[in-house]
Amino acid sequence: MERRRAVSEDPLVIQSDKTPLRLVRSCALLTTTVIVGFPFFAWYGIQNHGIWGLVAASISGIVCWLGALIALILAGVSQGTSTAIRDTMLGSLVRTVMPFGVGLVTQWSSPLLANANIFGMIVVYYLLTLTAETVLAVRFLSVQPNESKTA
Image (cartoon, helix red, strand yellow):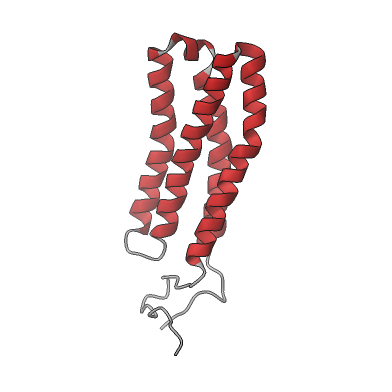
């Protein structure tokens, strides 16, 4: 006996058994993007600010990656639900406030990290993760003709 998801009466709701796998794959690609970009940030940080530059590069990468990952997961988990728009906007809020909040707090509270240009690194890392997360979310959330089912 074959198990299938219930077909929704709403033709805009996407029903796919591949959704969890696609979400995991998108999260892995986002993580790969951050890992590939990290050596450039680390090199810049070490060359210009020593060990504190490396610390700033690490903090900025982790914070921006985490914010983008949360946004991507919220968009993917809520796909096809009545809260999809709200959850996507919440993800955008988290993706934006988290890195810049950490950047502002560290800029004010840690002179060593402020001198290591942590806020500048967060801005550039934010743009990298924003681009990657947006491309992956659009790919992930786009409706594929063979995956949508209508009543």
